[in-house]
Length: 515
Ligand code: CA
Image (tube, rainbow, N blue to C red; front, side, top):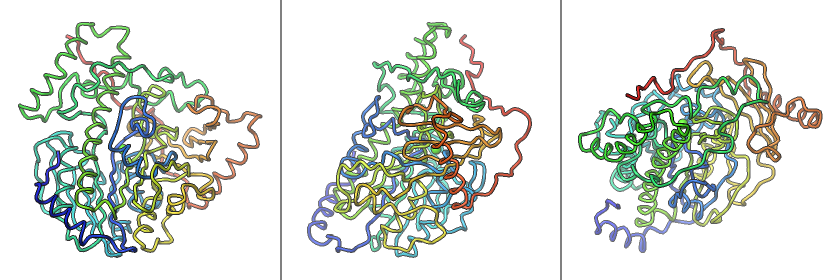
């Protein structure tokens, strides 16, 4: 798969032997691999019950894997804004996906530039405004398609034919090989669209898992019995709220003739088999879950393949030695837990995101780290790695101490979360809350509903213990900590109006006619 000519690899190898040994204190390069909506449960290093991700696992084996990386606001654009600024949504201005990111504010890439770094952003940007703080950018427009994406630069937009996950990697490798000056340490933000909805696999993986049937998760038919009015109102169930495009009953609309032929060869027979059931089969929920999960996993598989290409390049050129490689996603995701797809909630599958850091000679290989770290910590951490000053107004903290020691009991005892996008897609209510190593308290402030969970006794968060006499002291402690965190982070009251009418979000089988 490696695209480099052999002589270039040989040349780079000789250079690496003779001249490229980094000085003891040379600031490291940083490659930030960032995906969209990648659940920890779809990475084998995190114990995925579904599949293998050998290249992401390799990063974990050679570096540190964080079990408890929590996001400040579990949705795409706000997470990206937090990564760039080291601040919560209410300070960086990105409360929801719909807003325009204020690119004039202080960001980590700008500060790294000032510290002598060369910076590049390649792939999914998803912040609407022009990227700032980058010496080079090549980005998808908005969500971007899975195939044949228009790629925007500072000067033009060009459609590149092929599979987007492969193309973003091609562009990243091109920049590493020929684009950067080579005279400065660099930050490369290498950001995939995948595995975002609607999970279109690449041509190499269209039939992967065809011979496997995955069982529904134990909480798939969750009745939400103890959890306020919020959960049942959400419109994000795998059995009710996926459409014909999500389920690949219809092919993507922008394929070339050859791509369409390959696609139909893979999906045509599978869809014909479904039609023979008359669509009313008792097994339809299982069918939808399997179609959904397999396409998600297939999309992840291309990401993993391409991370392998990148890691091979770093090895072959000797760059790996003084390069921090980070793997993360903008949030977690539901793979059928509680019956859901999507994210947004403060529940574990969407609150947690993958976070793996490989830094040769600085971080012990195979470290499993339990500290309560967050995407708000990424910016200060990267600045700290670069030896640059961390501005006092950043709200995250450098993780270097826990990263280098494998643990740090004083790093963070409680984490603050807030979700704002209601009314909005999937109709998840606004909420904020606090999570400690064992407990979680959530307040749905538009409807004045509280939830509390003991994660040690109830890891699936099915049993709301808010108001339980057995937990009165714990609850009082969490309520106090929540108030303190809101003060510490200067969180204002969310005074944006909430309309009286019921939230609606049109999804579903889309009235697809079996005939
Ligand atoms: Ca996302």
